[in-house]
Length: 230
Image (cartoon, rainbow, N blue to C red):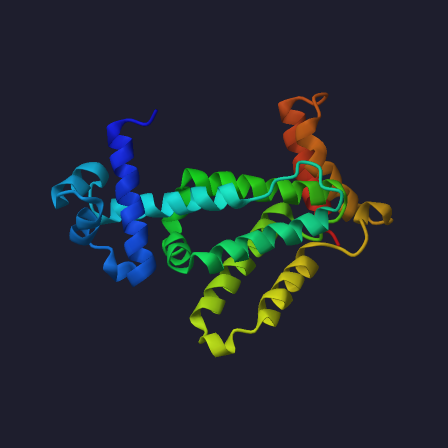
């Protein structure tokens, strides 16, 4: 059972999210949050340190909620369809929670959030399955950056547009551009070139136990070179 302090923190965070949703970031003052949560302003400082600490807690709550919305299939029948579905979930969350989403991604340091890192782990799992199947066109890290950047850019661009200019084709086009940028039309491991096979083998390395740690590091380096030699 959560402690009284944890319950109070949760109440404050929920009050801050309510103010954020209704009035934007400027509405989230320590005095307004304390009043909405039924507390005195000094309690906010005791619980969160300062307003920035409170906003960080609100962002962490957002990342946790986003993580809970992800649909995770450890063995999808179609990994590219799974990639599209994951991207769509990110867009849906952003459009449903515009003020919270904007706060979540307003500060680069929020990438240190535990829930954010867990969410990125889910994304890397999707990417690793693509690589293992020979579907990945680019390096895994670059693929993650492209997927994350296109989703975030799509949401923030959509929210910046007047409602009459919001064309759903924007989201569809960005998603398909992302898919084309990070995946190939046919699994590369079926081809004669070494790059796709190297990406697939490198993705499978963490699953093997025959090589020593030093051997695995060396092979990973070699495969990394081959994987970029398209």
